[in-house]
Length: 238
Image (cartoon, rainbow, N blue to C red; front, side):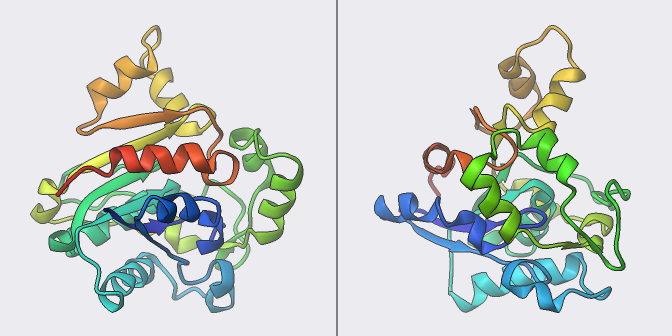
């Protein structure tokens, strides 16, 4: 059986995994959805002091205080860099990192993943830009959209801006990937290799197994069963 630690992307919290966790648990697996400081039910803790190191410690403490080992660390969207940094520091506890339609770091020793301001900033946070939801979440409609927008909270801007620096420990961490047909990551990859199929591009680019889901950027909202099944297929063994 696998143990999943689920790290949400921007504007989300543990709530975003609500439809995924039951499928994992029904199959006998364990799941620990995380809410990063300043988001979700921890939105009241947002400040200009909250940054990447805060997020890393959030996840490390979930691992430590739940006594987790041999875990699959799932990082959605920007949280791919959170998952990578956590895996670097807790490599002995991580079976593999699963990048869900998100940032994948290079295996280098220099700082990376410091994103420029792409969306409007209000003080120390970035509210959910509806045009981004419309662009990469076209399948988030009706009741799903109402739920999503009612639960989404601003994200601390330093989660975007702060880079990570990985050590040589990260080089041996195994990786798996889930990409979404309606997300911006896969679209960007394909735009760099015109005339090639998604499978051709991903097989050449990635160093681990992958799955492609027919969904927008938030399959945990619109395709939770398909996402859970993909995660289980990619969890692998020790």
